[in-house]
Length: 166
Image (cartoon, rainbow, N blue to C red; front, side):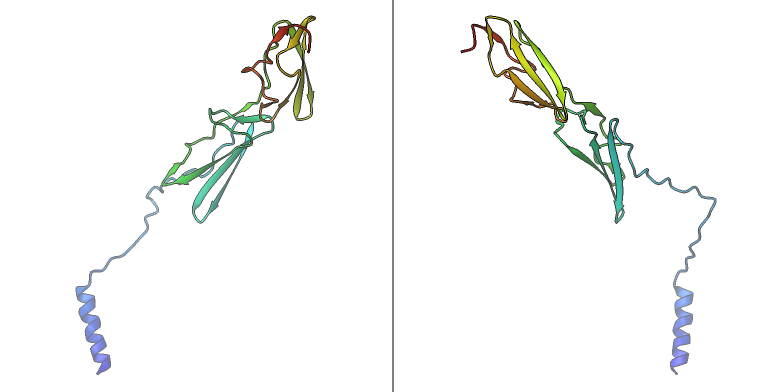
């Protein structure tokens, strides 16, 4: 009895249920897979990794360089994630530009700078009968372009004032 009920159900279901057959046509073009890596920025490095179908690329600049973007920070790493078919920061990283330690010498004075490892050391010397408006020794970090102490004026070592050091 059980066998006849099984055969009856099989015949009924096979005649009423729709049948579908899946096949693969190799002549169909394959969808292009996205490029899941990004070139390294100029003067920098990048590496990409995919974990659980999530691709992330991280870039950093070589020593003495920083990203060429307005809000770049010291030692910054940029992370670019491939989400919903697009890169979060766009298809490429910004290039890295050379950090410079530039500042103008004061009128009635001169500046002498020498490299010293990761820093540039500068000494301000005023002409006779003049004195510096600020300190006379400065150090610039070649990785960040930051002066210590901070320059008294933007990109300038300050002024040489009339009068001897007091």
